[in-house]
Length: 499
Image (cartoon, rainbow, N blue to C red):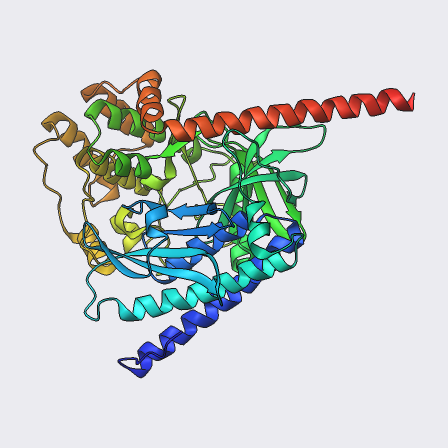
């Protein structure tokens, strides 16, 4: 990497800290893949997401090449350009909407392993020179990690080993990794604390069933606070049971890391749907999704503990990302990762704010004690966004947005009918006492002013816009069923031969 001049000592220190973090993370991910027998795509999924967070990227990709061309591509967010064309680029590339794509080639000498790209929003006075240098540094860590992975696995050369990762159309990838009694199939997504994988249950109970397996990221698995928060989420999830909530099947520990096995929701989240449509939802569709979400929230809000007393559970992180629209038209509330209940041992200190700033209630933004009505405010903001494609209090800065949430009123957009707006105004009241008493009351009032879309209508909407995702899930289901059938036959034959 060429030498770079920094505008200040602080900028140089920040750059070096970022570089150190990337190196440590690359080593941790590589080691974790080997320990658990996970495939390279699982590690790339984590690496890409965490590096994107480091440079505040909204999208990105890693594309690895073999001897004949691309063999493995991992993507994050919406690139806004063809990934395979982007993978040929080197340096900053301006995109529509004030975004810039920073691309670097993954090379070791004359060997080209592929490319890495990260999309960052905003204008750059230096043309993005410092961001590009960090992306190049990230690329150097990644190509070294990929080469290390190849060198320690079977194969005649790095590129030939990469060829083995290519999956022909219609064929079934071979799962290799195991986490507890679950066999890893493919990465699904990565957040700030955990990664979610599609996995197949093994053993007599739930044999062959596909699940979403959530596990703490390797470089966070020794953090006691993260582990405790993860276990809190698992305990809450095991108690929740409602058609509009994700079912948690199991929690466990494997090789020193905790995991949660939960229902694999076949669909897409509301945020992804809105970005794909690039247009507001019709009122009956938006209300239909939110009403189902409110019904799920009410079940969580009214959950009781073993002693019969209410747990007083509050989600605290409701956003379009956490509202999943299934291909069957069923809406599910996701991720109680920062939820709090009466009985939990872990307590957030006063003044420490958790959650997404753009969807916080005023009391949450001020770090005050919350109750279920805080989630209703967030649902009002989600409905506003679904109807307008705008975030009600987005000021382009987290602190300014939080001040706006506390102090500014929202005016009715012309496209929202007045009867519907009157219901939304109650949900968006600054004072919790002025909001609906509970989620069911809000759902009923919304249903009175707008007839909610039926499950079949929501199903058609999601299925029509994400046919590739629907086909991929169907393929995974068939592969899991075939493998389950083969395993049952093997067990049956073994039993017969032992008699």
